[in-house]
Length: 197
Image (cartoon, rainbow, N blue to C red; front, side):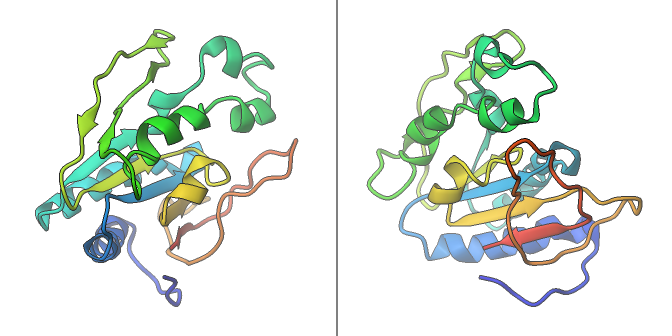
């Protein structure tokens, strides 16, 4: 679903996106999977967190999973160094685990039980979390850092992309593409928040 661009105050973005997600969840026969993607400077985790309360206020159960709990072990994700941009995009996230433990079980034909966390990046150890059954009519919100080209793109019918805003400290809403990059280049820092439904 794409609508025409229109100005919106930054503090209203979460309410607007939550209303769209709620309408989509009402028509979804399984858990609606929503990916909030963006460059770390844009704060996709903050937008994902901001979606939780408005959805719960309308009676929608929300499952909140951070992709930071599905990182690869430090020996793998930092093998090419801490400043290598390709390592950040290609080696950081355990895409197979995120799909296997969260996205696929909550999708069509899935078991309905998901793993809220897998790997603790601060201790570099498994979290040993237990599987949690998803309530009926729930919405899964996964935040990510430029992972639209990975697991979230092919399994989440709703993706909301965030990009940092230069200088203004605010945000503008505009429909558009996802976080894209050419191998070996750093991400662009364009001033927009762009829902891509």
